[in-house]
Length: 105
Image (cartoon, rainbow, N blue to C red; front, top):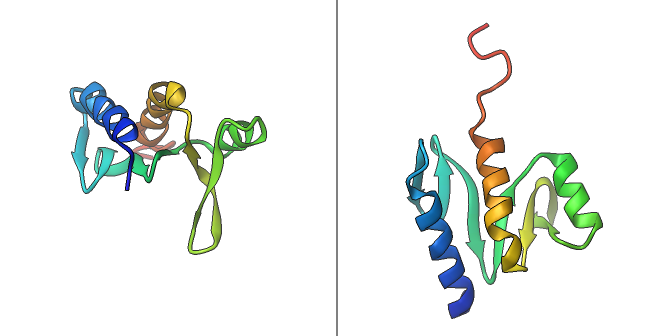
């Protein structure tokens, strides 16, 4: 269960991103075009980022690799420091929301 401060910070993120094109808030996550890119897990924000960016953040101690069922994700990281939440959620939104390369070809 999230602390009141983490829950409030996450609520502020949902408000910040609610008006973005293609963004919805559902099932405890912030989604773009139906794909989750950020959600609260305990007191940490989990964001979906390019593997290289996730590795960079983990190597600098800003984020930790996200584990699910004992498997470490290459792209999902958990961020405890709320001062980074807005910036990293913006990056995750751009990463997950960008169109696939090759589009219609």
